Image 1: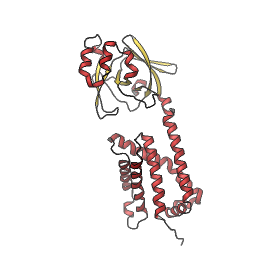
Image 2: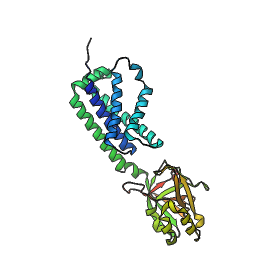
Image 3: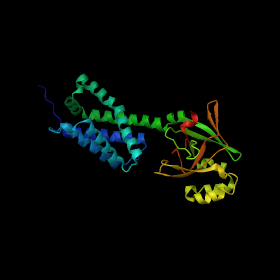
Image 4: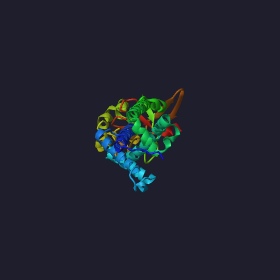
Length: 301
């Protein structure tokens, strides 16, 4: 019977590097903050768990439930504190990245040793004999995948497909804004139930009358002052206060207004909409300024 020798330090090093790269790609994919020491600690949690495959009498701990709990712990250690929604987004991204790259490992095994790669201990034997090559291969593969992922996310391939131009008409003035279709935007004005399109204040300020602009620039912190000013104009019935539970905060209020008309430009097609609210957001929506509005998905349906 053929014997296989397992070198714990090799298993630790490989698992540590692979877990680190997976967590790094997860952070890029889920737009989580990257802190190298925290990611290293999360990777160490995963690497430590891998030893349970090699230690006798601990086989009962190697099951789907335990693996899932370990993945939660890895995300928590690497990226905590996180809001609950962002936490589960991180977990989902972790599994997505793992599944996407899992084929690389099996492909490498077949390349090195044909079908016998399926045996776990034979896999460790292969890894031991080819440690430097495998580490170089894995690092290069993950680096390449990371560059492709960055290009896919930041290179606007998705965004260009989802982007459109909208024209907002208000107070007898019009302006055009680059908007991104946001399938996660389910914001509605609570009274009319109209969908809300979130637009940066800096992109909208030239549309606002002079008497309103000064108060509006202060954001939601001076709502009373703002509405005292609005009440003195003939536009009081067009402004709203909209509660929300996202946009970088747990909850809050944004000021919105009912435009005279909203036109969505998609290719040669124009869609004119009147039953919509424009929510005024006082921060940047896109890190690189590719879009300045988030379009409600119902607008195009």
